[in-house]
Length: 138
Image 1: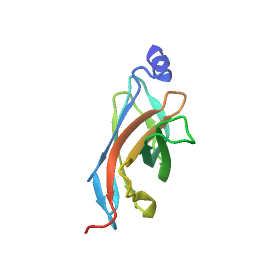
Image 2: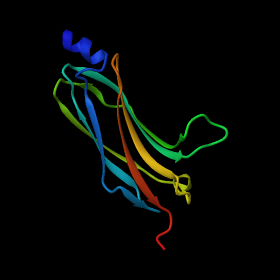
Image 3: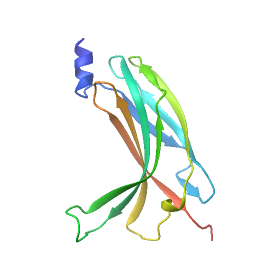
């Protein structure tokens, strides 16, 4: 019972690590990989897994109080995951198809893949990794 309480506030909860097959994706290729989920100290129910491709811009902007801005340009929702036993490991494969929004000529813009595991009655867990999209192979 105490382990379940700790998981609801994020202590001893599950962990997520998203591993892409290749961190550089060329135009016409698919971003694919595997989401590795390690169970926490108690059984938990995964409501869904959300993958988001973020275009992150760094630098001062006159219209914002923040120096970093994230814009979601791609999303995948996996909602058939279910329950996760304590100390269990689950692997969930995924594929995302890039589009023109992924490209940028600006040096202060980077792409990130954010994975959020949404857990019923507990703190969600996240992983975030940089990816590179190459529009032209010239």
